[in-house]
Length: 411
View 1: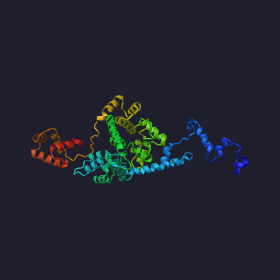
View 2: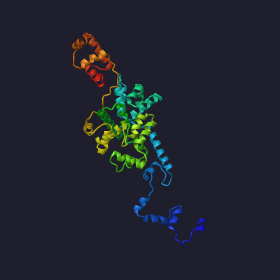
View 3: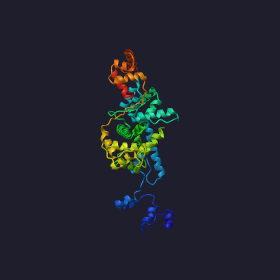
View 4: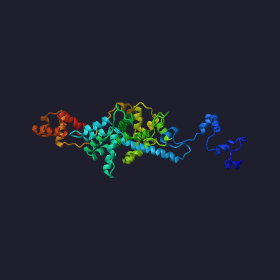
């Protein structure tokens, strides 16, 4: 019988083949095997189903081969998808209103650096574009990891050119590729940025300008996964409630998580490690430093937006940045109503010491004669100083001059 089988001759029909031998030698499933499988209990079928790095639905979406092909081919399928998603992020749009406000700021006769920085930091795509260009301009020298430094490296004309080239999206006009994703992403990014700045204020963190960037870009890896896997996040996050549960689901279903992918993307853009490292580590439970600030800010943003967070995880992370239970309760209470944007004092004061003294006394409500007496000047000289102050600040009267100087931190 064995020799006949080896020669390709069919066994006699009277002999019933041994089930175990047929499972080994058969190349195609037979009707008898299919019928036997149909009778197999569901629990047994579940236990014998081959495990993989991603569910079958995800494998089909990313073009991975069927179970039974090598793991190397699955990794190659994931790699191709991620590479295509990285390339797609080159066209990620800015909010039209953010782009327009930046163009309005840079087109003024008196451009305030603080206003330009604030406009750039208000949008994910604008921040990425300006930082990438500034780092290319440095050409291997000291890397640029803040919007403040990037705006200083680039000229106003260059920033304006960047803004003019940006693709944009609008809430009332959905893009065909990204649909509503840019708006949802922007809202959480700004909420996290806001929370991070509130935490930095609480503990006196010194690298607040860099934290403003890392907190804004912390979830940029989600955009990659969103483009690579059409079922992300709904299918991948199914059943997960907290940020910790969602990151666990990503690692289990995809083999990677959005934080790690975000770090890879930031390095791919040529941005410094000081930005990439906190982004890729911000979901690690025992993280320290700036990544811990981002982790806590992310939790606070979810809390503020009505999402579920783990109180124990939040308190654990808060302690790692020097915030105890009482301080954390204060932050939770104040966060929804706190000011959304801090004053940025990055512009050098254009006024001379004498002009600043005159303006300071104007802010105190003093009249020309009082100012002249205190500074031992003539009234006409005080008027001359005021005329020069208005010209340097682009103000039309004393009230506007005082307001501008106060907002920019000169008074």
